[in-house]
Amino acid sequence: MPRWSALNLARNTALKKTPIPTRQRAAARQRPVAGATADRFSTRNPATGEVLATLRIDGAAEVDAAVRAARAAQPAWAALSGTERGRVLRRAADLLRARNDELAELETRDTGKPIQETRVVDVVSGADCLEYFAGVAPTIAGEHIDLGAAAFGYTRREPLGVVAGIGAWNYPLQIACWKSAPALACGNAMLFKPADLTPLTARKLSEVYAAAGLPKGLFQVLQGPAETGRLLGRHPQVRKVSLTGSVTTGQAVMSDAASTLKMVTLELGGKSPILVFGDADLDNAVSGALLGNFYSAGEVCSNGTRVFVHRSVMKAFLARLLPRVRSMRIGDPLDPATQVGALISEAHMHKVLGYIEQGRNGGARVLTGGHRVTDGALAKGWFVAPTVFDRCDDEMGIVREEIFGPVMTVLQFDAEAEAVQRANATEFGLSAAVFTRDLTRAHRVIAQLQAGTCWINHYNITPIELPFGGVKYSGFGRENGRAAIEHYTQLKSVYVAMRDIDAPY
Image 1 (spheres, rainbow, N blue to C red):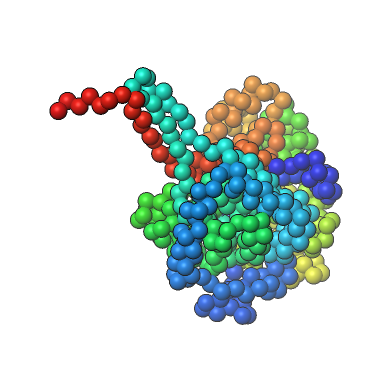
Image 2: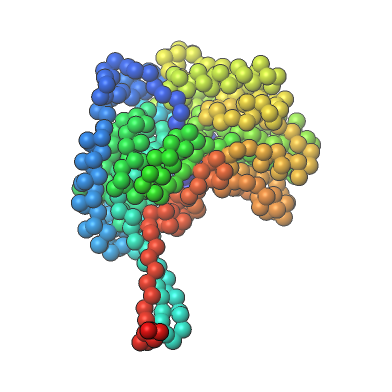
């Protein structure tokens, strides 16, 4: 998820409040399409259903060749100074910014997200990530430890070697940057497999790296379905896997990594809570809830889809929320005025619509939305109207399970302790937020929430300087910030004797 600057906000003319996010996941599979064969697959435009490209599936032979090339290139890259590695990353960041509009359009065609989002988030946040780790690269170091007059010690942070990144379909270019930038800054080579639903911009990133002077073999893109990713996870010479994906995919990656004791970073699912207390600024709380539910058509892993609102302000909250949801413009993702684009695939659209029907049948009330949008040319794509439920029960499937679509559930609470207990009553723990004017309460509640990434009076903004990740079934390890360096290096301890050895024999 991106850092937002004044420039970002000025360019985003359709969303007036501070925009957001980013990140994450894939579950639905695309159907076979014309041109697809046993060794090839196709990617579609979610807004039109048209085939954008047909690509070769990389199998065991291609993975082996990529690992060999990475192993050959990595030692010389690791031997460079951090400043030299950072210089390449900085040039790549500049090239991404120069190609922003071109890459944003390709991302929109591949993901179905509005161009107003991809122009100010997807490419820009990736460039910010490369620039940040370009600056971090020269600072990667161990520490000196004083052991008294007889000795001293020091530690070295050394690269792992060849590492793998496996991306999700919702922020393909950004995720490729989030994984490759710290890996390269630390002196590793990275093999990256994008989601087969959104494979196109990762290839463009490899072009950018090459143009920036990154030696051949250090960033390679492997294409294909889940099995291609599993080949990376099982390969004995890949030393670490970083996955953004579903819980079930994370479990498979961990299982595969166990056979060779690989390091693993997992950024998985979420069903995050937003707590709106009675003293909150309701306009800000509504803005946070909108950004935490409907940006990228709700296909964001950290989304706060369980919105807990204090009984005293529930009526006022809904009165502010519903008109803004109903006024959101659903349309052609390439139209700069469009605010809500298409879902990633037909299968995923039906999954989301199935959850909406389940909610209705379970007794929840649809306050707005709740249907597929088929007006005009939109009938060719996979569009679902932003949907808000109330009269929800904590045990309903729409409240407990990750839908990964534009579906918000609004729940009522009476007491702080109750809100915290209900917020934590989930297997997930990716994100959480508190809206209140009482900062003592804000910090007290945040300390009790079981989530790895939290906000006070905001939602889904993720500056590259801050670590991002979850707890419980939402995964472990961190991306972004200096914490990411710990996950792409190994620590070596060195003892330096300053006196002769006094051996007892």
